[in-house]
Length: 122
Image (tube, rainbow, N blue to C red):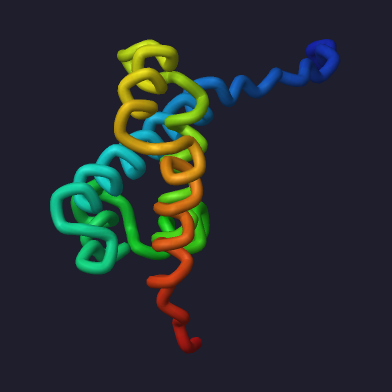
C-alpha cells in the first residue's frame, strides 16, 4: 500500500475587507437615521430604540458602539467635521458662519446631549 505524499499546509490569508466595509456602511446607516430622527423629533423625543428600529439594528448594538444618544451626537459632529458630506466643507462652514459661531455649532448640541443623557439602571 502506498501513501500519497502530503503537501505542506498552506495557510490561507483572511481578507476582512467586505466585513469592514459592511460594518462601516451599517454605522453610517445608523448615524443617518439618528440625524434624521433627532432633526425631525428633537433630541429629547428621539429614543435609542427608535433609532435602532429605523436603522434595522438592535438597541444593544447602538449602546455598544456609541454608548447612547450623547455618543451618537458626538459621532454625528465628528462625521460633519470630517467634511465627507456632498457639499464641500468650505461651503458648509460659510453657510453656518452666517447663522452661528463655531463654538455654538460644536459645543451647544453636545452640551444639550449631555444634559439629556439618561442613566440606565442595570
